[in-house]
Image (cartoon, rainbow, N blue to C red; front, side, top):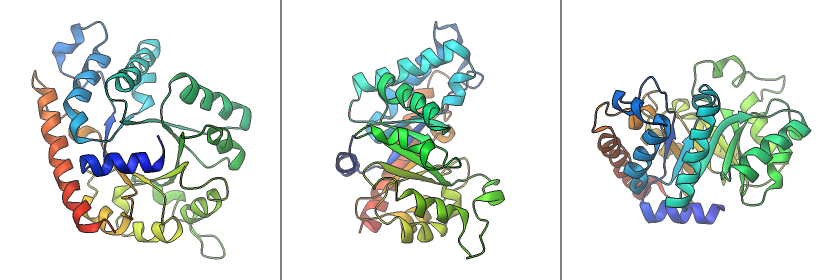
Length: 275
């Protein structure tokens, strides 16, 4: 999916919601544990319930890899289900990969050739040769970690060099030499608030994947005020606040309610801040 197609879906649905499929087998409704594949059964119900209100899904690989082969199969089936039933939804593998060139080439092959996802999150620390292999796939996306929502982001991302440039700013500026805004997005956490304004000075046209709204306390209104551009430029992720909204037989319908609430807020934000 290219940038224009993604924006068209945002306009059509009046939503820039990404539902994070951070599926923890210890938190799903107990009655699903009798299923042959409880993770996939849970995901499928969540996807069917939330698809009208979102434009993207983001399975977090840690939650699948923690289950070994069974978890990886559940991830594969989840991606295949979205591809089959909801082919216009954008799929992000939240894997945070990034290694020396030949290793990154294998990661890229895994996610783009085999899994057929649209995007993968990538860590920038090892530099250009660790990211380039992911950029060899037309209409596939690298989502580069830039300014994250966790408390530990203060440890490195906001440190300044002798010229006063912060590390996240260096990541944004340097990575623009590798490709354009048709293949690169950035992770910028919702808890960073007004720093979105600083991010937009450097990457005005790029899409930003924004975790941290909901359970982590980020403000959707603040993200939109400082971060939205003329093609929206935002994919705002919510995971726990949606997928664990209910814990009984009604878990899917409760997830749909929470997704719809966010979608309606996003519709209002699009009317207010889309420039």
